[in-house]
Length: 293
Image (cartoon, rainbow, N blue to C red; front, side, top):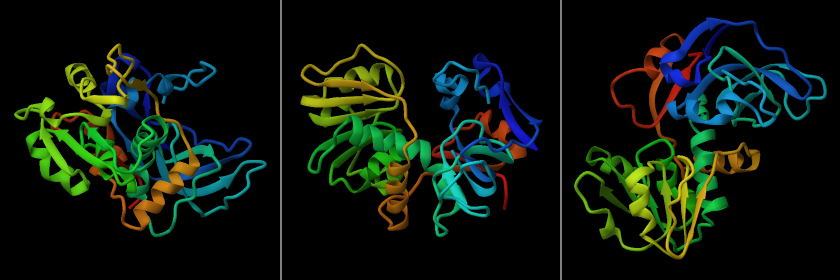
């Protein structure tokens, strides 16, 4: 089968190659999935979990597809069933994965592929770590991006969202659900005033300045690495997204009933994937690789 592999952590997307690999076999409680679409963002190559599992075993390389084989002891899924999940090594024609995450028939494969990592990152940052409640305010950086757009939609939480980004991203961020938009190139960030939660996907000086905007008891949630930046009377939480079937189910239900739209950017075939990842132009939204028409 064809698959994209990465073997050099320092090379980034430039080190990715399209190769031939043996088709995977289903282990206990696994299924083999014929991949229909897979989501990817370049920052996935920067995370330690891409290269080693929790036992520090080598893992060098979110998915939708159709089950083609079942491992021993697998229950809850059947051959031919549509599934989606978040798992390493999904840029391939077939992948062995844990037996969970059925994808409803009325959700497109590309939409399903765009949802797990971006959607779960937004969900866990807002609710699990940020403890967002109705009536609170959120400063959502990168509100037109794959994660930020889901934060802007706030998945029905009843919060007030101030999105940030480039001037060209204003309408897109508002369309996804932001109540206001701050152009980081020309507007003054501090004019936002105090907020209950900052969702940071940028880091650096923007993160430092944002910390000062968190009101007493609030939280700065970041997904771009550890930081010494702290709100004066609040918390800073740095986290890495984790797979969660129940949160995924809640997210896909919001897609089905119209409360949430995923932000799909470039869609390309597997043969075009490496060139797409290394393109010089800016891609907004989630890059999705379609393996089947």
